[in-house]
Length: 186
Image (tube, rainbow, N blue to C red; front, side):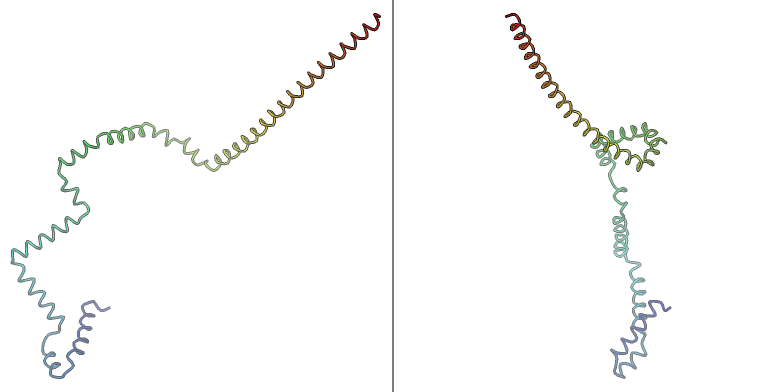
């Protein structure tokens, strides 16, 4: 496979042949170097000339600094110690709360990570079925309780009516007995 420079060189030669179509220019051009060679030589000459210049060196160093600043970890390197301390002091309460939560978690870690809890978590589908069944049973119990309550109200009403009828019947029997006794006495 051709490398990229060879591909570019081939394309430039094709372009040069189209640009320098006349025979005079073609002959003059064929004596000189190709454009790619000229560009490569220019880059080498420019690099050599700039290597000794202090301003260019400063510019290149500023590029290195720019690369460092663009690094995502840059801000961690250059935050002032006083800023870090004030940040910690301003967030002291939150840090204490987090530390307390972490220590509480450490104390309860054995419970949270216990074998029984992991069994419960593993048995979650069965536990869900039991909970669903319990909800159904609770609904049935509530319905039965309502029916029993209604029946108790009907029973109480019936007993009250029966008591009233027995009382009325007793009163009528007493009146009849009194009337019979009065009739016999006469």
